Length: 292
Image (cartoon, rainbow, N blue to C red; front, side, top):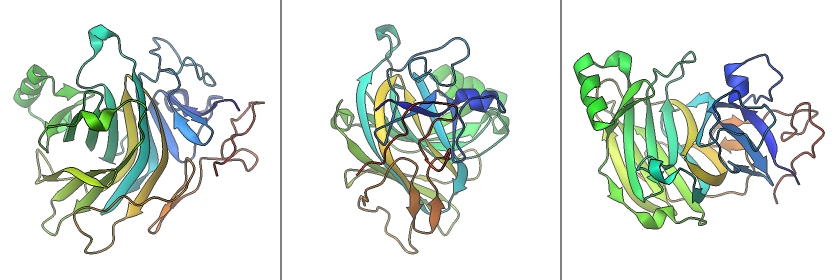
């Protein structure tokens, strides 16, 4: 069984090209690779030029950023199984940003980096934190200068920690799969609460009271990996029931990559060629078989 490219940044930056595309997902950096029903980064690389559309080895996955094309919310639970395998950054570049981030409430826009979202991060060093990204267009020049001094301005926006920083190296053990759940709830007063659960344990939560702008009660969801070789599966979006508690226990159902069909939301599998959701357009490779 060979790894299969589902889609990549080539189809995002060069629409209409021969690059494989997905009706459900977009890669704004890197390459979405499927292997035996799981999404993988392969051995992440950094590319200075164009990334070949069908390459799993020149993948630009040292910065992997996957988003759904569909927006979800309010009151949703986003979950997936995540397995970090190795930190791939040069030793001189290892920093607190390397690792896994679940993206929620991403505000879709027209191909620029001036967007807002929430980030739920488990870094390779064990740091866990919830942040809000505020677009530069909503910040003053003085605030931007302050954020740059602290290293909290990047990708066209400022990052504000909504939760306390936790040191949980046990959640970043290489080779160990974790079931990560992030709940996004719109509170009666319009504020938004975000809660992280890992393997059924409520780890940290935060409330956006309107930090530098209105809270994001809905938006795209996705996955970001920085300098991390990893795999993930069972990416799901569930509608939180009315009156639900602040945290949900981890709830799992066998699935394969691309099946998001819970609680009233339904996203079909990754776009198919000849009826097979894992077929690489224009390729003679084997289609990817569903997992048991």
